[in-house]
Length: 630
Image 1 (cartoon, one colour):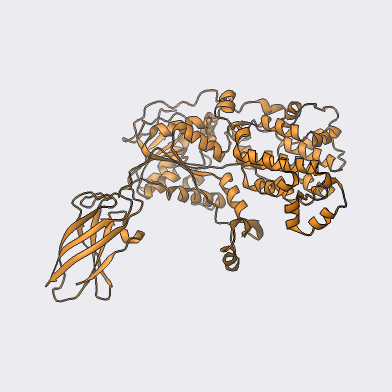
Image 2 (spheres, rainbow, N blue to C red; image 1 turned 180 degrees about the horizontal axis):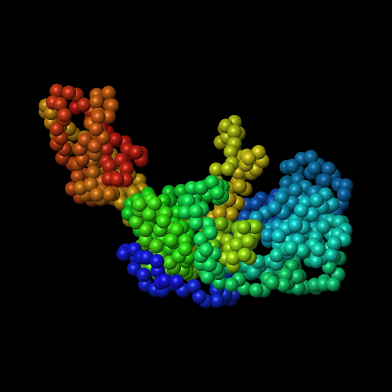
């Protein structure tokens, strides 16, 4: 591979791309350095507090089973299972509390009634058997096993087809605890299943969590012991090894070479050239465009700002950014993809600046970029902290790092597992809180999460009118024809597809990259025949520095539009008055005006407004223009 395909003159290459290396993880640095210290997490402390409340804590725990990230959801489910196991009333079939609790919801919450064998809470727990995260499905199966409720046997049977070994074992063990006699041999139950992933997210060893959950739910695992009589582990660590499977100890190899090889034969050239504007994979393409518009709408840099499109593939993001007026540099590890990108830019008649490089060792000079943007590529990187460190290095002060990535559950999808097994490509997932920690460790002082959901949910006008007066947790919306909880959908969509914006310091807000453009205009004008003269005072009532100039992009001038007495537009660009100096927020400036009208005897209206040249008129973004009859 060549050192680089081509480089922009504004972006000096400072080091050679390297796709070698073992790609193995330093377990100590991930677990004790960068790793997730779950014991000190506030939400997990809350789970423990609620578990100690016993049945009274169950309603709040059930909320956490869909409002938390994967670790909170898993531990909340586990805690519900333990509470039911330890609730003496849950094992008395006929009590007055059960009778009332079955009929009165507030009574169940107020007095902590879980029902016989947890019947009042087993429905929400069973719903989590379909969770995106395998560790959450595992915890849900364990919890149902603690309930020993025969009514949940059908739910548990569906999980026997889960793609992952530990979930199948947990489901089979729970079935045994619920009274289901399973005649199949262990090999038959596990046939075609995959071992547990080595990691949950990027930094948490899966076996650590398997041991934790196994230790809590040893009584349930006895059900698996009845099936697999040849192997009956004694300790949680032994159970964790059995749950994980024989291949779980293997490190995932560095897949950067596989990323290059994956596209070297150019078999999907037409799709890659037209992506995302093609009917192939339409749903995926629409999701990509949603990600792009969400990130592009949050770019805070001037037109012509220099953006690195990282992990760019065939450069569709670069092309859209270039069409919006930014300068783009396209980086990908595979030259085959960059060649397709070259064709894309040639068709669009746009300048193309490609670099073949590795995002963990960017061949880019420090402090040279206004922004770095990455969509659906960061999860391929073998060392996330190195990527965040490199991006921070190459960004100028005030620069932005914007990402939109697949999150929880992505690595488990059929497509992801196929890419990993068939091509050796790393298909990990970006977990929101891990990414935030990496960003802060790299030096980013501002980390923001975009709250988003894709336009696939709806409600009737009547429902919305009612919902306007209620808390969002009571909202119910439709996804297709299915009724779902709005707050659950929003939380899980953000965890399942995190979008984040990280900033390196603060960029001065000026008219090159404006925020709030607002002017208070006070005219003092006179007419003498065909001549209008006088002064106009313009006060900066926004938060953006007005840059003076003679019409270049991002400079601010007084714009004069010519209208009829009925305010019909005659000429939008009738005259411009230059500012003599820059104007800071809170300052005012007086401008001398002298213009000639087309016909000395005709009445006109002139409209006074400030204009940020080639960006917008102030009046288009909320400022109030002034009309003067002359």
